[in-house]
Length: 171
Length: 77
Image 1 (cartoon, helix red, strand yellow):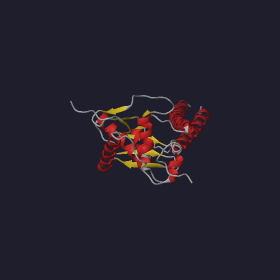
Image 2 (cartoon, chains in turn cyan, brown):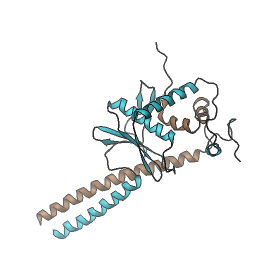
Image 3 (cartoon, chains in turn orange, green):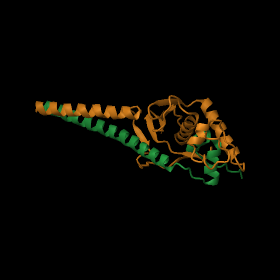
Image 4 (cartoon, each protein chain N blue to C red):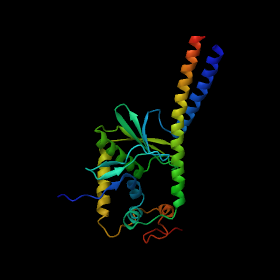
């Protein structure tokens, strides 16, 4: 029996170590995953806020006590700091979770290929989100919208760069 | 009756920040991008990430179960 206990313990340690390695590779903390939207396993419908006319589904929602942590994963993005657009997307999930549960997330997590960023859900970010939503709705009133950058690499990376009449020259 | 605002998806915020025109062309004109393979690669990477996350949870659960069995074997020894 002692040998059996020892064998089981060793196998358990191997499993434990492997689970830690895998979790580390995902860049996410050991928190309970209450929802995930990957691997085609949707557990809930999209979140929706009638007040803000906003909808969306975070990749994961982790439990943080009574509060929740939205997670957005960009597995192919290589960057050492989070992009503003990704921060706003994560902010939208924070707002949607706050609307749905009545409890504001303290922060959300952005996972890129190599880095995980914690984005605090602050009043400033809330204001920036509302301003961006207003600006987008203003643009929807227009018959055409101008390019919003001066960086050729964006046009090169854009799926519409070859057809867009407003694109920067590639070379 | 108050005018209803257009619904915006959270994922559109990233597109809009990247380029307002690209976002508008997709949303209002229904254009499809010329890099569908990028979308497919992204989806595959997402799925792999989700599988790793699930597998890490599963392995930890099994590890705890095995440790309990080991403890039981010790008690019975």
